[in-house]
Image (cartoon, rainbow, N blue to C red; front, top):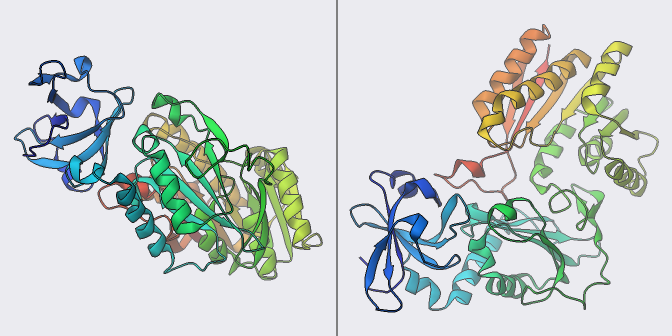
Length: 429
């Protein structure tokens, strides 16, 4: 056991197995007790979690019931995820030079992406727990002038306490023209943190100096120009995880009529245009999204082929079926229909409905590219849904490919939440 004075979190019997397999979270109901020094008397004392006086945001060491060391984390009693592990070393080793520690993590993440992406590419640089920086997201956007901007999200207290060290490391490694914060996600409420957004300086503080920088960037992905709104777009402004899936879908689009649903920025549709599609209809329920799609259509000179439609996809699919419309390729890329296990049955029904209706709208031997970004809709369940949608639509399905997120979204073994995106390419017969 460590001889340092950091608080020690002891787990209940047999609760260590998942952590030993790589799981980076400790939930409140897994904790037996916490042992820490009494500041007044400098004596060690044991406390149950509800009575624990260790300050939120403090570094703690996590142990098995028998006293085996598991790792160091940051405690937050406001969250059900009471401890997020930040390393397998003892706390004093991490905190003796935390700046260097986090710089090494950022450099490791950057060097991994350099194997797959070039300097002018945009990609996710830090993928939270999967890159061993819990709760922290960083997107690297490179605009058409090869200027790099970063968009960051501090989604947990475990990374918030190292804000200045992480920003300093990003500046050193990436030398960005600006860093924009999108910590305006509701998950921060569960961490006891206020939501915030805006340009930040090299120390992670609000920056008045950068306030005049444009938050609308034009990036180039797969040879296509895409306007991205990092201030107002969903999450960080653009979904970088589908880059290679967009290319895969485009392989089937030459001389075809394509329906691109839940389009967001029109990226799937524009990849289809680039591949030589005869006609593309891109649909989103958000008028702001449709305006962005129209802008992207214009800057790619795709007006003769591609049209943006503002509509509820569920209603539009019904209308197309009633009108006898047919398509050769349909892309379904909806938002997560569930963010909890409790709602999975309802989500299953939603996925099944849009897939069933899409199958009915496809010409014989048509291609369905269907996606889910909900971790709770596991891969086997997603394919089961496709099978039952095919049964109800009286179609037969050949699965041509099962795909996931790009390599900038690595999957951490032992942490299944990092494998969230499913993309299945089907031929519908």
